[in-house]
Amino acid sequence: MKKLFLSLAVLLIIILSACSPIGSIAIHEFGSGYYNLKSEKEGSINVYADVYEDSLVIYKMNPGSSKDLDPGSGNGTRISTINPDSYLFSSRFIKNSMELDLSTMLTKLRPASSGVPVQLNANLNALIYMGARKDYYIIKSHKLPLNRNYSSVKQIGYDFGIFAGIGITPINPTVTNSNTSLEYDGIVFQKGIGVFMTINYLSVGITLGFDNLMSSDSKIWIYNNRPYLGLALGIANF
Image (cartoon, rainbow, N blue to C red; front, side, top):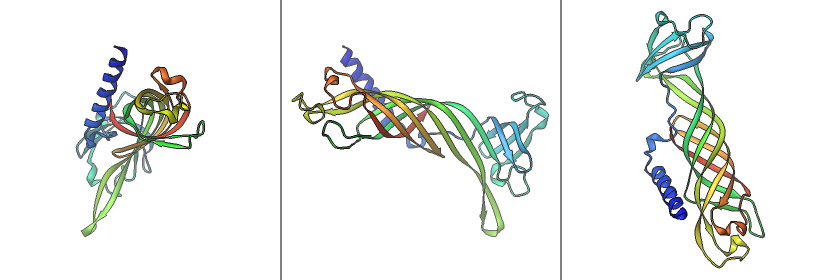
């Protein structure tokens, strides 16, 4: 029963990963919320940004407060029309937050062990990642024909945290020092730490992980609880 439950859990996670639409990968869009605004004309101030499509309204905070906004301070504009005369030109909206993501490990680089050379593995897996995050939303302006300017928001984010999940790995005589004659896909519990970088819709991370084989062969698996380097991809945000 326990093995059946674990197998179903792995299947569910993998299905969720596979079915995530490309547009949902690592979404950290510039949306309504509290930010630290940095610009050449305003310096560094705390603001509330009300964002709807191309519409942006900036509210300043009341003196001495970081979350109590002044409703009368609203200053609206269209993001696409921000020009060099605007106080928002080349500005940055900075946001600190906690991150909770569904991710997958694209590859695992396992060091040489017990006579087996360095391995680069790519097996089905999924993990839950949690960490501290910092996002930068930068107003970028582009020169268009006929001397027109067009502005947009470019997002860059960084985060550092921990992860845990379930994956599949091949078990065979090579990775067990010939202590088993069986060849099968074993279920592993994976955990570790990771650093992610996000640029617009792509979130990629470098991880330091450890796998534990969830079967009786864990004692003979040469990679059990041994460190590896991983390349991870953010799939969806919670």
